Amino acid sequence: MKNTKKHTYSYKKPEYKKPDRREFHRGEMYWVDMKGTDGNMFKRRPAVIISNDKCNKHSESLTVIPLTSLDEHSRVSEHLPTHVNIMGVQGVKSCAKCEHIAAVEKRHVYEFIRPLREKEIRDITFAACVQIGVF
Image 1 (cartoon, helix red, strand yellow):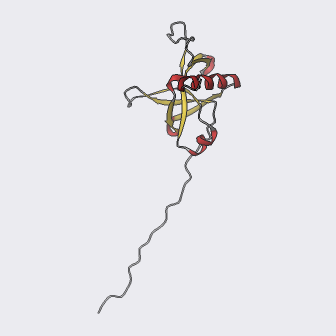
Image 2 (image 1 turned 135 degrees about the vertical axis):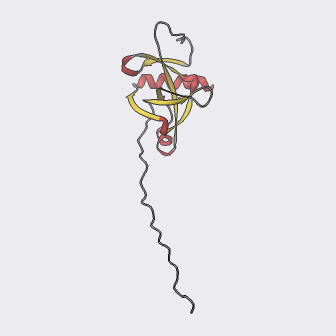
Image 3 (image 1 turned 180 degrees about the vertical axis):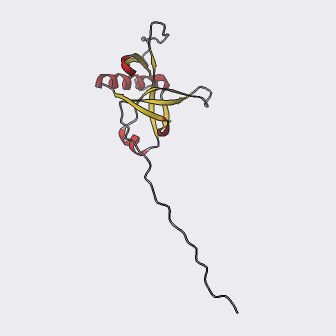
């Protein structure tokens, strides 16, 4: 006798879970893991999002400018057109180094710090344009 029973496979479609998506906006400051010069090391530092909101919504990466803190021993020159002094984390004077424009994946973006004021966004945008040769 030949077995005529058909084999049936049980397949349960996995439940789709929407990824945890935060909304990121141009002009916001976050803690971000930035790649080191060797490409492997990461250093967490504050950074400002400069990419437009439409890209921020649909892309897996963000364009950011890192900040560095300023103190009396800093070698950051305020005479460079690509450096913008702003208030950083907890009121500490910081410098947006617009010559270090970087793309970072959203998974490397952590805590929200604060939104920038309109003048800070304008100054950083101008310095980034200077860096890429628009002005």
